[in-house]
Image 1 (cartoon, rainbow, N blue to C red):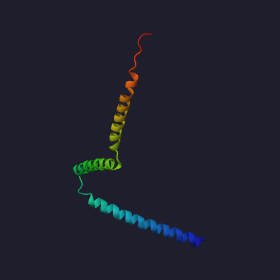
Image 2: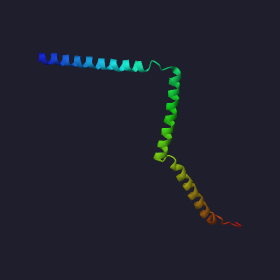
Image 3: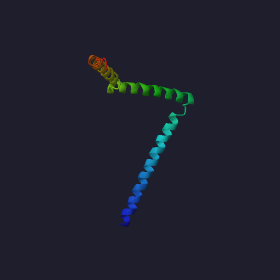
Image 4: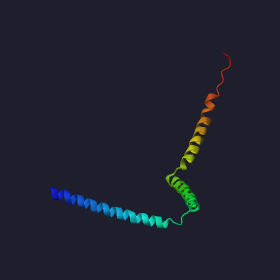
Length: 98
C-alpha cells in the first residue's frame, strides 16, 4: 500500500510539472504575440467585434423568424377590423320612444 501511494503521488507531481510547463509555454507565446498590441488596436478590435456581433444577431433573428410576428400582428389586426365591420349592422338598431 505504501508503494501505491508513493507512485501515485509521483505520477501526480510529474503530471502537474508537465501541465505547468505547457501553461508557461502557451503564456510565453501569448505575451510574444501581444507585444505590438496598443490601446488603439484594442479599441478597433472591440468596435469590429461589436459590429460583427450585431450583424450575427440580426442574421439569426431573420433566420429564426423574429421579424415574422409583425406580419402575424398585421393579419390579426385586419381580421379584427373585418369582424368589427360585420358586427356594426347588427348594432344599428335605434329605440324610439320609451
